[in-house]
Amino acid sequence: MSKSDVLCKRVIGIVGSGQLGKMIAIAATKLGQKTYVFANARDDPACSVADDLTVADFSDKKAIESFAQSVDLVTIESENIPCEAIDIMSQYVDFYPGKKALYISQNRLREKDFIRNLGIRTTDYKSVQNHNELLEISRAFGYPTRLKTAEMGYDGKGQYIIWNDSQAKRSASFDWNAQYILEASVDLLKEVSIVIVRDKNSKVAFFPVAENYHVDGILDTSIVPAKVDSKLVREIQQTAEKIAGALDVVGILAIELFITKNSELLVNELAPRPHNSCHWSLDACNVSQFEQLVRVICELPIQEVVLRFPCMTKNIIGDDVYHTCRYLSNKKANLTIYGKKEARDRRKMGHVNVDLS
Image (tube, rainbow, N blue to C red):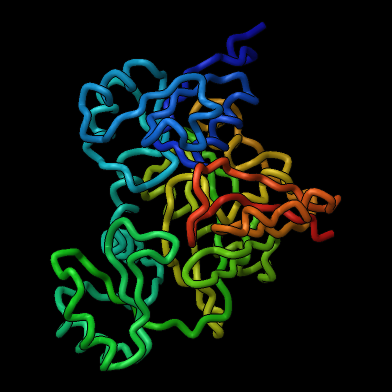
């Protein structure tokens, strides 16, 4: 038996303890790997399935060092992790998807500048320093515009639609010590996303393009395959590979895109970790996004992805988690509950994948 035939057991350090960390850990266990989670709280979802855990704050340097010395490699479930913590861990172990991908994706202005510098289109945008600039730039773009915090916003948090001058003027009460980005409106046809995995040898594999529908800034449903022609699919894949290569990603990268009514492709956001819009891969594909990530970081062969049937992921938000029994009697539905302690408004509590064939 050659060395390449042996499935080596590694301890995977997962930074972050939410549902994505939980699903990474489950995928790792499937392939015989062990997991060690750096958690925010002991009752977070990933803690219930990890082999070991550290509960600490990112300001605790000793805890970070001890964690890094206890694992063979480190990956993340969120891009909102201080780079300083990753710098410490990287002194001891390899970090995936890589520092550059994390740093760029943490700030919307950096992200859009990076994408534009690759010659890839985005919506028009500007940095905004105060409410007078907001008013001036919104008028130049034409209403409505969308104001976002440059950092830490997700699921509609830190995002505001500016409909008119009056609303722009009312922004004087905002915390203008924070950094903001203002984005122009898009003549939108649909929103789509793609997930790409890339290994150390620059080999890539793509998950199918998904079509996404948001409600109040939160992803509500993702449907795969997206109703997009083959030429546009190839353009999306080429764009994804170009971005992943420029970021030197070793791991997984999700890219959200706009398709305009004149078929122009605009990159919206990047996430160098598993993504909500690809949860259908757990049931509808030969390999999930989580297993692909584990394969890459453990230097196992990545799979060519096969979509077994068209599928819809429906997110379960807040109190909707108490009304999910109907899915258990649907032979075409697969329900996943994340195990979060408390159901709160706008909080993702689970999802259901529905076979659309």
